[in-house]
Image (tube, rainbow, N blue to C red; front, side):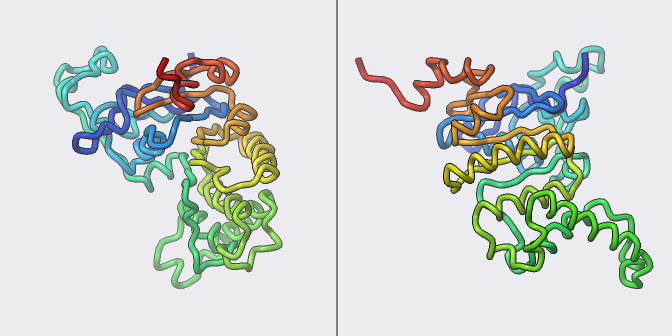
Length: 280
């Protein structure tokens, strides 16, 4: 059986006495769109931050295409993951790849609060991301000995802007774009890093219903055109139910439900987490 593209095994993230993510396990398979949902403060973005190397989890492990991204097993609780290996590894293993190395491995993300380079143009925002895989060094770049590579990166950036419908605004300041188009630019910048797995943190935040519908079609299209696997956090339930292949639901950092959209939608634990129940 093929390995999962992304796998979280018993991830716990504790800040002092607060457990933001509690023993969380989940997986994402190739070509899937998988949603992680839950009430505000449920630990969704914290889980994303553990995947992308922003946080080192208190315990647990993240794998990408079978390779360890982040691991922290100070108490040896996950011996089953090391079957056949030396017992010394049971006691303690800590591995944290930096966010830039994780991006180079093929994982890109967007943020709940848009993080564009505010003083740069639309084109420059995407060009900066294309430099992740550049082969020229400081000397060749200074002497412009690798003009062909610079040309390729510019062509790639323009291609991506065309794909997301922003080619005509290439010389505009990034922050002058309407909110929904800034979201598209942030996704174009993520695509410029050549990801295989794209993490979207509340991509529909601040969008009106028409923009949300357009976003759903856009996400489906980029999955197909760029052969992406997509893992997203979202509060817009219409969007989640429309585009997700599977859904995970967490509350207070703990997994309370998983399944197909119809299954999750009717799950009483999910309804209670979002809406609460009468005292009676």
